[in-house]
Image (cartoon, helix red, strand yellow):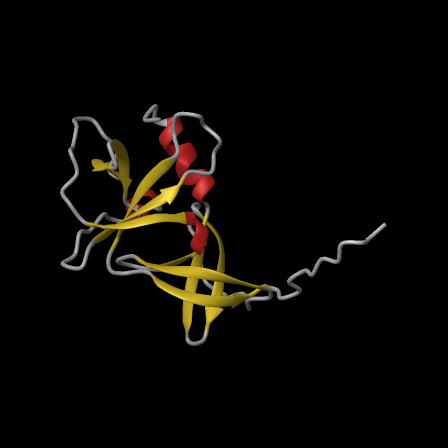
Length: 156
């Protein structure tokens, strides 16, 4: 009888993405991003919450385009370098696989250690934690809560 030897990766690092917004930077695991697409004006509808900019077309789907800043109590802004991050939905809803998030630039990839230093920064209701990345602070978003906002508004 033979034994199968397996090796495990003992590294406590993962790859993260810094998502630039108009007033903060979000930090998500790289697997959260399905695709980055150019900004295109969303198809708007009447009576939408201010944080929902409308819907954008992506791969034969219509995705809700969200402004994280507006959902967190700020203002939605579309700058000259705007992009759209198509994020994998986490809520397990069978008909919702992706949501779109307005960005103000191109995400940047970086290696992260498991023990990121926490930052002493105020958090919005949609932020789980603030972390120190060199001289910069990044916020870890509560993507489940963002998705729940869509559900609570009857939009998904």
